[in-house]
Figure 1 (tube, helix red, strand yellow):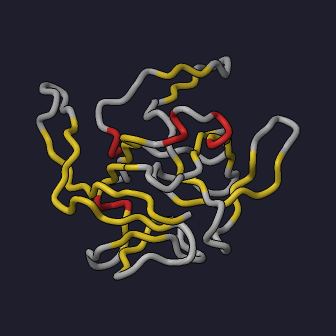
Figure 2 (cartoon, helix red, strand yellow):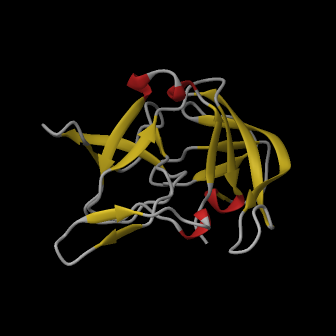
Figure 3 (cartoon, rainbow, N blue to C red):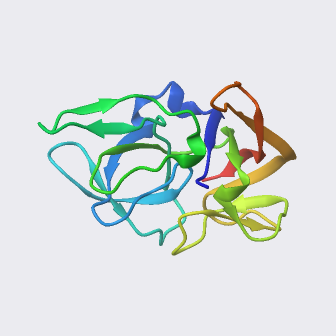
Length: 173
């Protein structure tokens, strides 16, 4: 299943300049992925770049919409019942936000790699957060709650499934 991200308290909800549009023409990208900004186009869209420097990174978060395309090329967003099946499709513009110190996010366990630890940090060459015993010089989150969950609606009942998640607070950017 795919990563589920809920940006519960983030500065990007109130400051437009912390939000940006991206496109990746080669790969599908999950919500919760860590990315760097590459070239900027006239359409005000960044190309996704590989994470090298651990500063000034973005976290992918787009509404979980299923896009249907008809024979004429018209696109329709119909919503989705289970965000664990959603991904940002290659070649389509998606949204990301620049984390700020103090931001709190709820992210499913699929969004963090490694053995559970006190921190979840960015790492060069990786698009998922990595568990670590300490913050790094760059994007770092402190694990506030390692037994949180996200309620997922099923076909017949809202909140009928619980997904293991972590509540994180950004402590360094």
